[in-house]
Image (cartoon, rainbow, N blue to C red; front, side, top):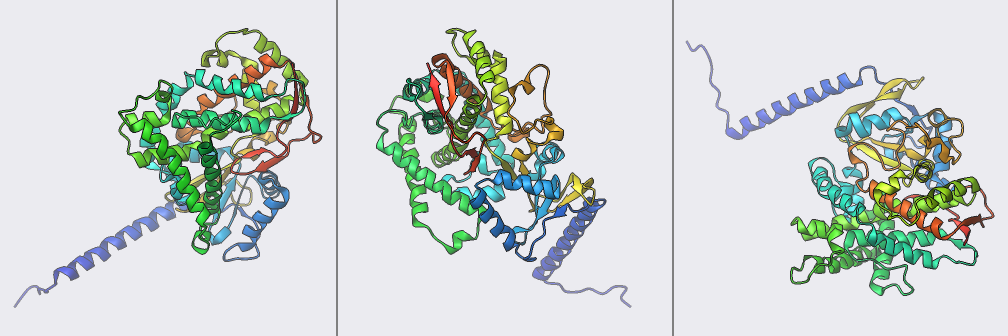
Length: 500
């Protein structure tokens, strides 16, 4: 009598059973892991919405309020005052957590950095223009990009003689008779010329009387491309409903401009100038980077490198024109250095100038809000439940929006005068917590060009104060009104009169 029975099982059947078994084990592990994470967690307060499935009323409200108020910061402030420091909504039927809590910044940017990323959000939007570079990747790919770019920006910080040429052209465009001038478009042009030089090795030369035609075509194409990139990020499904030929042609035109520059940089038969050797394009080419990847990296970096100086300079002079005491203190400090060379070391030694820069970037961060997406199930330490003290379970794929501008105005973090521009708060031993001072981000993804940006802001400010002894506000609107594009800027610019 047989003690056991044999079964004939074909190889495909055995493979199928093993696959089902492994998938079942994996599902059980995920279920157990998720349950462990959920223990003690409670959801944050939710914004009421009429459409329970897709949150279309939330989406519509965002667009109409932004159009009417022209200020996302004002909208965010209203929401935080109504729903607390952390809340959630469900646009497109997907959970989105919005926060101004430093505890969440610390987790997302620091202690739980690996659980959050940007790739799933940014890659789709940026790909037609800039492929996958530092701004749109995570993990090992992002680390590789970062390790290459950081030393290149560090070298550029210590070679500011090229930037001084652009500042001299800027000064020549400011009226010497004290007549009214809006500094915002001039600072934009300064930033364009400087950032293109740093990135491409060739400047767009917009501060010259006659800007080269190919540079103007590039700027027009790039700016139009950014509108499409923004639309793809905000409304990802729109791309499938509306094919905009101008968007795609603009992306190609912008890429063609950079390709032309790369022809010079990568052609060994053409001698590269000493100035080009400090450019990001040359640095990447010298490391043997793939040509298309270099182009994508340059186009992806162009916007943040440009806005790192244009927006802070505009907002700084907006406030200096309304604060004669701050202008006088700056004049005294700048006068003390005489004709000394403006090195990064000297710039850092000017304490009040750095107070002015820090305060401007605190109150008016270039990026009002930043977004991260959960790459795996995780937990935020606080903000859940009726009293907002319980941890929040964050499922993989959930987006978290960190509102820098609102955090910068929290009186419990910065004092009762948090909404006032007061450089003196940075004097003495004052050193804010690293997770609330987010001028250039925080943690491993902190802006690699932050030192470069601060140095260029300082040099520009010093040169203006060395030439002009007085400043007057010429804007009938006294208060700061923000206007949102990709970054937040002064809606009324910086309308001033500078006195010799």
